[in-house]
Amino acid sequence: MTQLGNTLWSIADQLRGAMDADDFRDYMLSFLFLRYLSDNYETAAKKELGRDYPDVGGDARKVPLALWYANNVDDIPEFEKQMRRKVHYVIQPAHLWNSVANLARTQNAELLNTLQAGFKYIEMESFESTFQGLFSEIDLSSPKLGKKYEDRNAKLCTIIQKIAEGLSEFSTDIDALGDAYEYLIGQFAAGSGKKAGEFYTPQQMSDILSAIVTLDSQEPKTGLKKRLESVLDFACGSGSLILNVRKRMNKAGGTIGKIFGQEKNITTYNLARMNMLLHGVKDSEFEIFHGDTLLNEWDMMREQNPAKKPSFDAIVANAPFSLRWEPTDSLADDVRFKSHGLAPKSAADFAFLLHGFHYLKDEGVMAIILPHGVLFRGGAEERIRTKLLKDGHIDTVIGLPANLFYSTGIPVCILVLKKCKKPDDVLFINAAEHFVKGKRQNQLSEEHIAKIIDTYQHRTEAPRYSRRVDMTEIGKNDFNLNISRYISTAVGEEEIDLEKTNRDLI
Image (cartoon, rainbow, N blue to C red; front, side, top):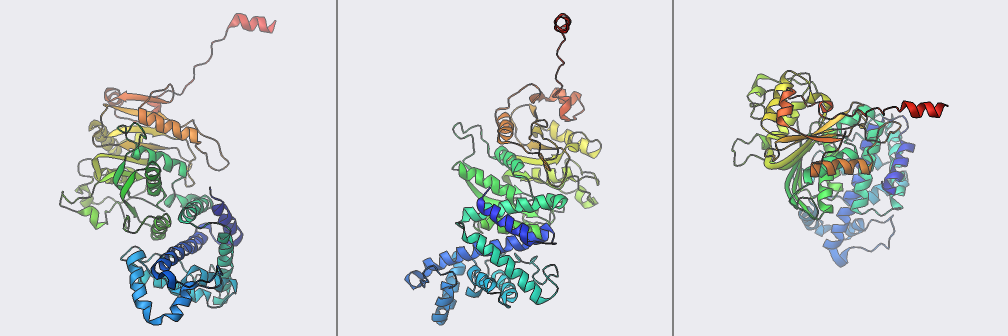
């Protein structure tokens, strides 16, 4: 990963002391985000002001906009109006990263107050809802930073000064900052163990899901779709999975219309919005909603008019595994679950799956990570699984190794669903034995990932690895999708040549 990410992570490691990884994460990532917002704002201001933009000769202690504000008081309202139009937010000179970094360098007692005022101002003076509440979870008065104001201020001075020093060694263009942000999210996830499942999908899993939903057999050259109008992740965490889909499309010269995400946890929801902006996704190109997916709290999704009902070309998800939920009577009549039935209280896995599947376009592809239990558990889950299979919606089942996640050691699978799939069979891929053993987590190498993607794309069969199984055989197995029923991983024992063994012994 990026050198910048490594540098910032070593700073985080030195500074967080007794603080939890995920508490410190929120401070570190917010400051990195403020740096991005400031850079973006100053670049736009330079363009807007042209020759009037003050030249400070590269002196980081001087803030050009502060000088311009001091000398052009009457022009400030018009300037800020233009900035709202162009970048959709306003930052006062005192709140820009260089101003804040200068306060930290000089251990200024006003740093904490300045930061609080700055975060509040950016939210209040921003464009519609994209920035509102963005810093709401950053508690600068938290006792975790220190008991007294002076202690908290001193701690913040140290953190910001170190980050500023780390950043000064590197190019801070949007790609570098975006990659560093992603890297830090991953590192903090590794440090916070089980809690990390709430917000982070490991990069390797992300690569597989992104490939699945962007592949197009009609594109012989790239094998990728040229355009996706809309992509949804209804349990988006920090947004890394949908960003990976966008990155894959961009790399192949394709385009995405708009990214949609939903997230229940407020802190993670804020992380996702920062992550989008830090990766250069304009606020008009994404929409992240804070709310409960299972209760369908997003008004947009509850549209009754069939002509206006949202639907998506690609849906990716890594929803909470086997979450306990309370399916109410009203949910039984919910359009998402009506034809398949409700998932049991003990595990909402199929509720998440059916939510996403309901919004999938007829020609769309959905790839979702689920615990293995969905493949074979009985009761309500068996009924849902059977109907999905009989209706021809389950395209591929991919079994993955155990211990790939920070949050759980259980083996997981990827289900690929389509509303209009062509072949009357299900492709099974057993990749459970193909991994690199790691100290804490197992890893998938690039070769392992490429093999899964290639097998999926061409629906190839290979002994003990992949097989296309027709619906008749699956029906005979009572619509149980346990991979071991269809792909044997047993290796036959070599026959012993007794005469040769006897000769060798002699």
